[in-house]
Length: 216
Image (cartoon, rainbow, N blue to C red):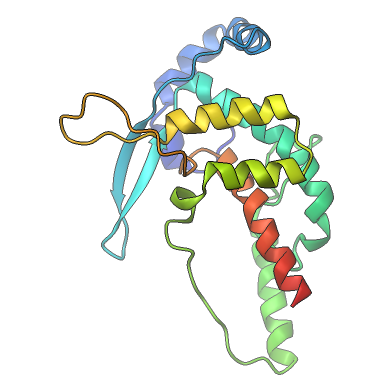
């Protein structure tokens, strides 16, 4: 659980410590449940944290077991996605850069990518580009449709069983309730904000936008 977001990890300090006491046993159990197709995903808890703009950022809290399953699925996606997008690393894309299996960290260190981003901006200025467009894809994580996500994962040739498990989990984690509601509403869009894996999963969709930009 190498999430660099210290605040997100702080919600799970006690849970991580408890899991670590018998981590091998827990991991073997998760693996066996997955292989037997009987792993039961848990509903998530949601926090709404204020942003400087005055709006609220929804943070999704997953159980430790669900975090591991989520990360395992996205690890498989990251290996394949990197082969397709590595030519953009630190040239057109500077965030959510997969470090690879040999690294103890999931992503490249952000400081390195940030320095290269700064040099890229400086080079563009020297080339005569004097304006910067800065925009935010509002509520992007919450807007990713699961059927669209399935389409893009299929184009990457991700194993169908992995995709089925991932989307089954996402359906539960992103479900909603309303005041005094008796049951969850499963709307099948959105990915959890907070877990380390979500940044890489979003790239499965964003890489399509990057490819369109390259075509002009």
